[in-house]
Image (tube, rainbow, N blue to C red; front, side):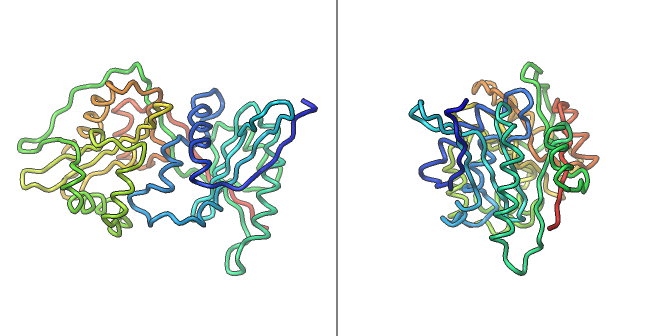
Amino acid sequence: MFHMTLQNRSFNWDKDFELVRDFLGKTYPLKDSHFTWVPSRFENRKACSCGTEYQDEEDKEVTIWEEIDKIASQPKIIAVLAIEKQKVCWLQIHPKYRFYEEEIIHWIEEQRKKTRRASEEPELNFYVLGTDTKRINLLSKLDYKNLGFDEYNRNRPLELPVSNYDIPNGFHIRNVNITKDFVKYREVISTVFPHCNKMTERIFEIFTSASFYNEKLDIIAVAPNGDFAAFCTVRLDPKSKIVELEPVGTHPKYRRLGLAKAVINEALIRLKEYNPSVICIPGAATTEGANRLYDSLGFTEKIEVYYWQKKF
């Protein structure tokens, strides 16, 4: 290993997206690596239907670490840091290279001290899986505090059969028509995620142009009066075939009718023809209703995710 060196560099979406997508796609399924993001979650930084239009300066919120082999011609990505707008760090690192982790976190801390605005809290935050004892032990050693359980990462076994479903009389299920359904689509999503009411047709166009987007896998339940009553979007990474269910929800007027279960079941049925490699729900809600729904649909492989913080 004497000829190996580690370096970090800035991220450029046009040049580096495919490299990061490949890294996440190959790393997520590995043993001891389920703290990593799936590729569609990373691509959603630019193609989020409920966000604002991505700006070039947001590239600064991503950093790549590469191991440089003086013999090999191509650097190898071993870690990627993505910082969300709430200044929360998601550090994805290949399980074979975790011996670099403490060095990387020290670098992140120093950068945070240098770049934070005077008005910002002098702190650093990480999301960490409850099963990731290496990250937990390291953060504890570095004086981070566990602020508690925040969400689940859920997986559904591929071999599990999909059950049939029923819907109330007069309702029907179909996929979204991206040329006709924008207004009703925004309306139903906004009833569950209020910040989505700012979605514009331009943002919707960007979202539906993402590589993970498949119109056939964007499912809605339609009420007898034409309202969109429930929704389930399946993001399918075209290279790794990793599937992420996001977002999922039901309009408050139409809850307790089994519609969320129906749209997810329909999505799972349609997924069969795409041969997914993983079916997951990263960042799944922790409410009693969400737990009951996802457990009933076979997303029983779940890992708790905790919020860790260090104040400087």
